[in-house]
Image (cartoon, rainbow over all chains, first blue to last red; front, side, top):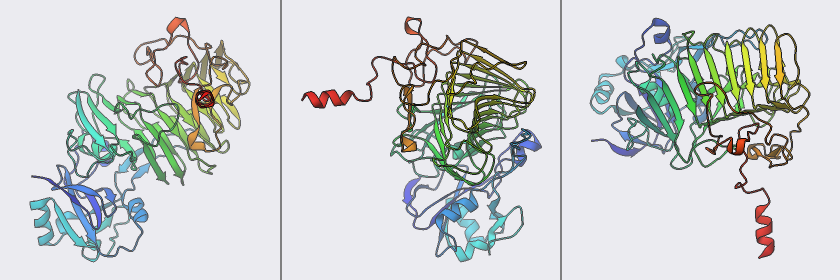
Length: 142
Length: 352
């Protein structure tokens, strides 16, 4: 039975599985397992456990960015072919719905078990940052 | 029709049901956009007056003409002629953002107010189409209020942009306003689209307020374009621009050439309080695009909508029935004498 909870740290909403699509072109631009969908500030109320297809990771401790920077960094999408205002050429589409994702399958066993059981886990920034990866540069935050 | 609920003041992690709505339109899209076997509606509200702060890219679904996606504001949260801070709205900022960008076939957006508070990159906008897949695609934007940044910005920006290289995009009862009047800012542009129908709309600001470019066709009816730095109605390349019962603050509404037609259009209709209720308020977010009254040049200057759905509409942005007594106005507001004039309280309080 889900109940309302209040985040004390930065709350990260994740996809727990790949979104399907009928073509590879569409699939490329859809959410993937571990993608960070949204980031919320401390104090956000949320359902625990969340409904499908969500997972929550609450990040505690000091994060070396302001919340505004965290939100801008982790909610960014990579899109291609943005229109050229001079030529009028437009082919905008997302190729990565989110640039950053959490490598869920590489997380420590205890964290994976918590997510599998509760769809929620609270971890300090120092314990999770190495699993947050920029898909474009392949660099992690840790 | 299957309805999923969005309440941007709700708890996170919901399932889209009435009791557990999604807390952002983007979350609804992430969870429910896919294979369509019915019309899917995302019904948006803000139970505590909050704002949706994540832009939504509709992408990856398989909509059809019969089973489309409808993004709609709930009653009490629908856009009007002025920004309402107390109802649902999309408020975003950043370097690569759109309030709603449609990348799939057959999507409809209705009654939403959206604005970009700060645009720090090129190609941003409010309500836009992008690369759609089908030549028979149709995207409808109805009863929307789209506002660009409240101060000048140096990046290209459009309130509405038809960038779908095929298919049809319809705008009915929509307002678009940009403060910036230079560079590559436009209130509404068909940048590489095929057909863009603009019916009973108001576009203000930008280098041009309405622009038809490349090889597309833009059909304007009952449209007021004003306040732009170059031309209110602007056509270029081999694009086509057709204007019926339109008005402009400059002399471009009745311009014609090999690719441009005009009939029953008004020129030099001032962008001020004689035309619209409060289009130049010093507080940009408080500007109001209701018709000023019966003395407005736009009053009774329109013509009946024509065509098939959604161009056979019978109401204005507020839901008021249009065409009563055979009168049609230009713009998003069919002026009703029941609407309070701006100074009505003056007489009330003066008397008592």
